[in-house]
Amino acid sequence: MNIDPIGIFDSGVGGLSVLREIRSLMPGENIVYFGDQGHVPYGPRPMKQIQDFSEGITRFLLARNAKIIVVACNTASAAALKYLRETFPDVQFVGMEPAVKPAAEKTQTGKVGVLATPATFQGALYASVVERFANGVELFQNTCNGLVQQIERGNLTGDETRTILEEALHPMLENNIDTVVLGCTHYPFVIPLIEKIVGENVRVIDPAPAVARQVKRLLEAGGGVNQTAGDVRFVTSGGVKEFKSNLKVLLGINGEVEFAGWKNDREIAA
Ligand code: DGL
Image 1 (cartoon, helix red, strand yellow):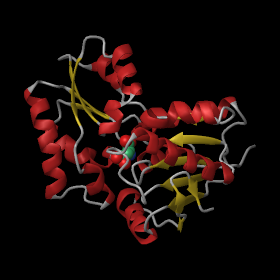
Image 2 (tube, rainbow, N blue to C red):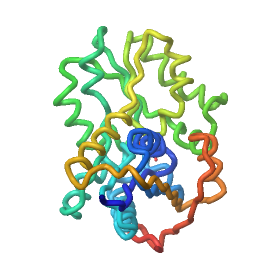
Image 3 (cartoon, rainbow, N blue to C red):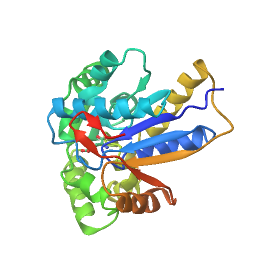
Image 4 (cartoon, rainbow, N blue to C red):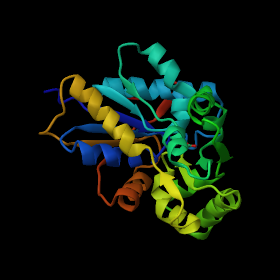
């Protein structure tokens, strides 16, 4: 049995929504999670810079013996997944893509809202998902400016968060959407608020459970799923105290958090 950890990363706390699903599906797996809070948000940054950060984090996770790397960030997946696979051909990566496919299959009105960051909408990955799967369904997109930062602050229900979501979702509702795709891993933490705004007739799709199942499939096809360990380590390039409080608010846990700082755009001090 391979007890090496699953490596997971995000620009900040968003990937914890994916970690939560991986933990619940495979509680016996060791995990090392890297939140790049020194650089959050990624969404408005140039693609090249997100590639550099993603490469640095991948090297860091590999140095921690990660056996598979989950890019638990739609923005980093859009900007860097292809690049990472080319740069590290022997490493298995699992990335995120906006769940346009299940949304297009399920919508009755033929109208779907997509919430994601600017970099995700600009990337070739989103264009290709839309081209392959939208299948005539009309997509309404919104970048929810500032929402990632509110979630990083643990503001899941306050006025600023509500206003950002209302401004994004009300025009979509006026256009008769019946499905909302969460194209950013931070957003599942505000699902209760989103559901309040859109009402019970609108379906909200979080791709994290599907990503966790994909990780499990790959582990089963490799050395198998570990049943005996289950140690989770958290690393942040930002504030340890803040990350600990994020863990409490977002996952309801008290976790040990370690700091690792950047030497430059591509290298983390180990
Ligand atoms: N959690 C992220 C995503 O899935 C990144 C958000 C950001 O840093 O802008 O896109």
